[in-house]
Length: 290
Image (cartoon, rainbow, N blue to C red; front, top):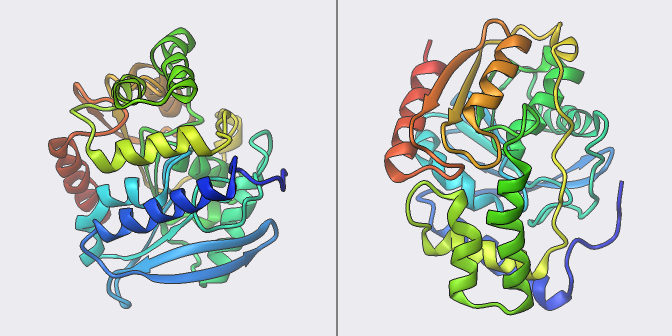
């Protein structure tokens, strides 16, 4: 675990937290803010939705503020009691302790969160890095998961390293050297299915400039680690995802989770389009209503 600040400056941290608040203002819901103890440090959790609705824990994408990916699931907020933790060591209001990606620390963190929330076997939903966190939880505490939804998840297989380097990392480096809207767009565009919205661009640019990025994902899951995992699980993979393309992650996860339900989002990149978001929410509702 690393306890060094993830931010390059206090001014940068303040800018990120202002964008955090702005990202929540764009979601048509009111949020309760809780700070919960875990063995790794304090974790900030957003809570919304009807108090008597079924619990749904949503883990956000990596190196981004919670509201950017949480907004994708706004239609679920009237049907479920949503608990959305800020991942430790990522931009947000949790402790800046960076958990190890080489062991089951993330799964242990989730156990502590569920204990603090009083949730025995909730549904877990995670896009991208959040999906990797759920896969680690499946390995360490399968009995704590009632159902799981993995959306373009990390930790199941990776896309072309060359493409990531040439299309995102090099443009990102050039943007940090000399920031401009054009350079930011070039660095961000390969992640999106449609044109990036301004909120996502603003957050992406601020994170590139002000955050020491988490460069690794939770370690790849193996079939042996998931032998005890039996909960109903939905995988939604993106055909054109530069990070975790469907043709890589679907076969690996099908081999590890034989009862897996799969939907491939045709033509989709890592960040869904508006039509993709609508389909994702429709499919999740259908899966969880059975």
